[in-house]
Length: 409
Image (cartoon, rainbow, N blue to C red; front, side):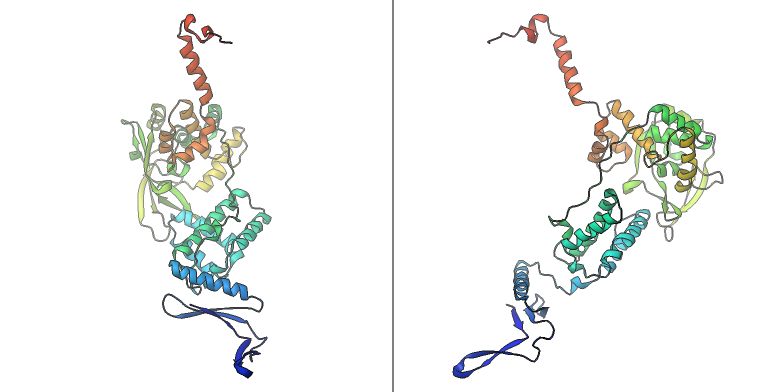
């Protein structure tokens, strides 16, 4: 068992074998109480507390002995590692693709490390996390942005738990209110708007709209399409790769969620692609990592006028934005090429297609996400039920209808 040492006082033998409490040479100097205990590895550990903190010292010792008996003891020295080092290591070793890692690193360095800095990870309490969330709010960050940053902090501290640096993740404390991504109600474009924007694009890029609106492919996935990805006979479009940005550099990579998929290729979209006059151009980019990834050459269907892979920043800010303006659409975060995927989903939902199939074709890893995003576009269950019951009663003879039921008054 451990014990608490009072370094300001000691007991000596007094008259009549009585114990006298006298001041030591250290009286009034430094921390008064020192908790001393034997760690599970057999070595002695200690922690000091200031004057008037004996109760805190007793609580610490009780917690240590409890953790030792439960097998959950963690050496406090391990938790002294600074937050900034742990955060950088988490970003470096996390299971992200390189484009995501780049964005995560920017957020962590801009909004986490400046606040927590070199603070020991075992000193991060729920109260400090609440202060950090308030700091983010005062910086003017929207709740959706704060929710992403909170997820990063929780991931870092979960990794610290896994590494045995801290006992539990303070982000999970009941007193910490987790920011939530605001629920956005998708308002799909009308077909007239889709065709209007398409008409304002340069001819070489118009089939991009057909594939986005007709197959639900993402922007980077469209830019990464090769002629071999079109199965005209089977009626499928295979999504095998995407062109994405890591910082300012383009790379090839797997589709989102690192999973290839296929999506229905309608006859109308297939005909557009059969008639597409542009020849595929071989483009060489690194795979995933712009520094160390292997070089991969792919014949791309869509390229820039110079025969390069399409830079999504350039395309969005100049080509797409200009087409929107000419079509009378105000450019915003809601009018990017992602609107074509929403259109695709809305058309299928209106046709009665299942959420599971739509989720698979859109490349959503969780059909529940698809349901949350598009549930308001689904035909009313109430309306379907009413129609079904009305149809049933319409088939009955008048004498058998509900109006003939006996009134027992």
